[in-house]
Each structure stands twice: as structure tokens, then as C-alpha cells.
Length: 212
Image (cartoon, rainbow, N blue to C red; front, side):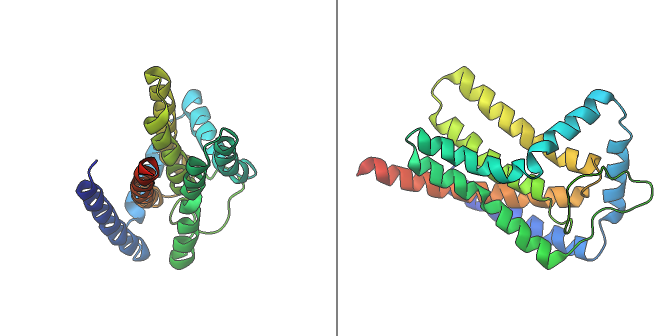
């Protein structure tokens, strides 16, 4: 993706996020949010429920506080300090999540007909911390794999697995009753914008390093 296209995407995504945040603050999305949750929770297939639980598992503590350190640590051990620093920066989406949650202060789902799966969750609902952190951490890892894994089959497996996990974590958060649909959409908008900007900076600095 060329720089102009990246700038255009980030501008469009942030405009959409601002619009969505305003609608959420005004309570305008609750009907749609509740309908989406009910549709997902009507799926009673065992494999689907197991998949939704499994996809969310890495985002709960303590693993959610360990994995983002292990990934750059492994890169550092492999002699890739530059990549390790940027992989750690992918976790910056967590700070964005915390800031927006603090500002919006949206309660988590609590309608009587919506099942909320017991889990270690707290705080507010908008945006989804799982989704935005997955997008930042695993999204940037997928980007690094796309850039640096030479074996085509392995590269496709890694990138496909990571992007699949990112795509599924949004529905999983709604299915478990921990977030609303609009929380998830907001996180994808913020997270992809962040990864787009971070990858652009990474490529620019990498080219400079290669010239020196």
C-alpha cells in the first residue's frame, strides 16, 4: 500500500471512529448492538462455542501480560533488536484502549436476555481491549512475518493464522457477552490505523538502516 493510500485509510478510519464514538455516547447503537449479540449467542454448536472461548483466551490475564513481552523477547534473542522494538510498540494499542475507555466510560453489556460468560474482566466496554490489542500485537507480528519470512508456505501459514485470530476475536467478544458490536468495530478502526502508521514508520526507518 502506497503512502497516500495509507494516509487516506487512516483518515477514513479515524473519521468513522469519531462518528461511531459519538453515536455510542448518545446511546444510538444499543438496538443494533443487542441484535448482533442475540444472533451470535443463538449459535449453540459446541465447536463454535469452543472456538469463541479459545480465540479470546490469549487476551485474558495472566497470558495477556506475558505474550506481548515474549514476542519481542524472542526476536531479541534471535538477533533482531530493531524488529523487537517495533513489535513491543505494537502493544501501544493497549494504551489507546485505556485512554478511550477512560473518556467514554461505557458500561459492559447487562441486558437480561444476554448471557455474560464469567471471566476476568473489569472496567468499561468501549472499545474492546482484546480486539485493539490483538490488532496491534498480532497484526504487527503478521506484518513482520509478511516482510521477513522467506518460505512462502510458512509465511502464508503464519500470516493467515494471525489474521484469522484477529478477525475472530471480535465476534468472540460479542458472543461471550463481554462487549457490544460497536465496541469491536471501534477497536478494529483504531487498531488497524495504529498498525498502518507503525508499519509505515518501520519501513521508513528500515530503509534508512539498510542504506547506512
